Structure formats: structure tokens, C-alpha cells
Image (cartoon, rainbow, N blue to C red; front, side, top):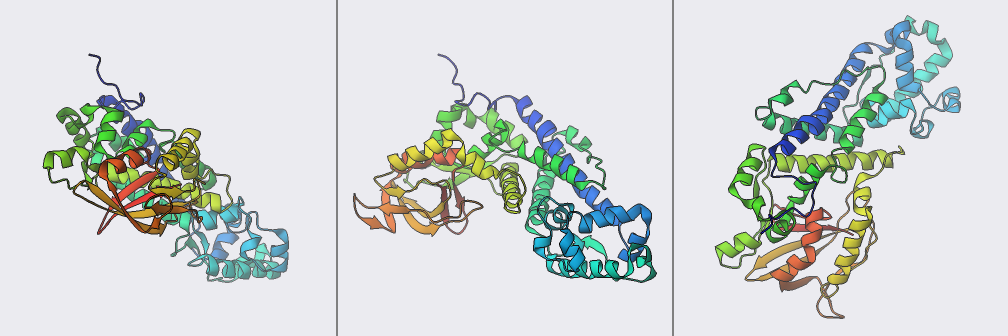
Length: 414
């Protein structure tokens, strides 16, 4: 009999070289770029430290400081001596440093705009050549209140650092993943490189992270169909454990027969494991692309890109059709919904918890539970096997996911 082969040929989980290649190449390049960007930002702040009057009086620092603070600001705003948010267009240097990296004058964007207004008024009165004659009491610094992209980058840094610290003893090559030596005078180029390396990690483009995402919260029977029984063999379990992947029950069917409960359970990453951290890192990168897109940058909203892939859209349409006996749902690719779950004795109870806004999936769409053809309900009970039939594919693709805290919740994008 021919050996079972995974339905996704690019997922080569049996081969340890495949695991090592991801961490040594894709992850290491991303981590080096991330650290290089943060180091370059620190070097920039160090270069421009001190009272702004003295910085601007120094010919070697003046152009850099003015590019960060006023680069691309509308001329009419400078001439009028009043800098407001609308004066700083997306794509300008002043916008990038403020709204993406959180660098400016003041503790946050509001105090920064006020201080920048004061700066242009002083420059207008005195001129740049005489500005060093007085102390301005202004500093180029990092905001104490981080704008969303920078907050997301900080979270990405924590998650990537957690993965690095867990695996650097297992993969010695990671120890040599030195920060990229970016030029602090051009953080735009450094940021673009970091972002591109982050996008390369996303499941739409990377078979390894697709594999990790598919283990987030998927019924064990479906994983066996897609990846073969060998996924749960001792050699593979040991290989996964070596690289920090631990799988636990996320949803127990509670059938009363332990062996059957184990076989039919929804499984997912153990909290704090490399698999959990990598899944959260993926979503951090999704969040970053969404935030940049919302700020007006020409960056794809990568979560929307993933769900909009034609074959996944087809799976959602198929889900809406196949589940029409229990759910009425619009598939607009703009909405999210959440359900709480309780499984017992061969049945699973689905309880409507309303819309769930996540990034660009933030519109109101129809998603209702059905009892019979024309009866709507906030709560329905269905056979556990029917639940697996309806949701396994979406859970595997990451278009739906289950989380376990004080309650078991399922989230569905549609």
C-alpha cells in the first residue's frame, strides 16, 4: 500500500531539515531585520539627543532633524505657522516618523503637533541660523504613548524574542542572527525591509506558517485527513516537541469514552509554546499591515488578502451552503462573528455572542442560528459530528478559530 501523503505537498513536516530551514532562514532574517530596525531607531534618537536648538545649530544634524519633523509637511501650514494633523500627508517623512515610529516632539501626537507649531513659529521669526541662540526646551524623542503601528511592532518584538529564546539552544545557527546594520539616517528603507520580511512569514506565502496556523484549533480527524495519521506518531511528536510545538485539547467532545474523546477533539497549540507564539506573531503582522493600510500607506491588508484568495472565498461560500440547516450567514468578507461552545454527550451547543470586529472584518452582516427552516434562535444543539462537518475546513484554514479561556469561544470570518 502506498504511503499516505499530506494533501498539501509543500508541508513537509516529516523532514527535520524543513523545520530547520524555516527558523534558520525565514525567521532568522525577519528577526535580524526587526532588531536592526529597532537599533537604528535608537541610534537616530541618540544622534538627535539634546535640546533641539543645539541640534538645529549643528549643520551635520540639521537636515536630518528637519526631515523627520517637517519633511513633506504642507507649505501653507508652515507659512501660516500652525501644524495640524491634516498638514502631514501619509507617505511624507514627517508622517512616517510620527505615525509609524512614534518619533517627534512631545509625549504623544497631540503634544507633538503643538510643539511643532511652536517650532515653525520660532523658525519663522528667528530663522534657522539664529535658532541656536536660545534654549527651546524641545527634544526629538520617542512618544511615551505609542501609536498603533509602533505598539504592534513592540508586541511583535516580544513574540519574536520569545521564539528566539526558546530555540536558540536547539538551533545554534540562530545565535548568529545578528541585527541588520541599517543606516539610522534612512529608517524608511529599514522599515520597508522589515515589513517585506514579515510578510514573507505569512501563511499565504509560507508553507511552514500555514502548517503552524492549521494546528491552531482544528479537529484531529481533519488533521489526519490533511496530514495523515503520522502527524500524531511518536517520532513526529518528538520532532515537534524539539522545536517547541506542543498540542493540547482545545475542545473536548465529552462523549464519556476517553479514547473517542481523544480522537474527535479539537486540538491546538499549548499556551506559551513556540506554536502559540508563532501564531500570535502571524496575527501581529496582519495587524501591522492593517494599521499601515488605514494610515494611507500603499500596503496590502494581508488578513483580507488571505481570506480573499479565490479558493478560500469558495470554501466560505460552500460553508454557508452546507450549514444552511443550522446557520444563515452572509459571505461578504467584511464581517466577523463569535459563538460560545459547550460539548456534552455527543451534542454541541452553539450560543450566539454577536458580531466580532477584527481589523477590516468590522461590518455588520447577517449571521443567525437556525432551529428548523424558519425559526431563529440564540442557542442551538447539534450533533458533534455535524459540527465537525460544518466547521473543520474553516478551522484548518484559520478563517475560523477556537480559543479557550474561562469559556470556549469560536470566531468566524465571513
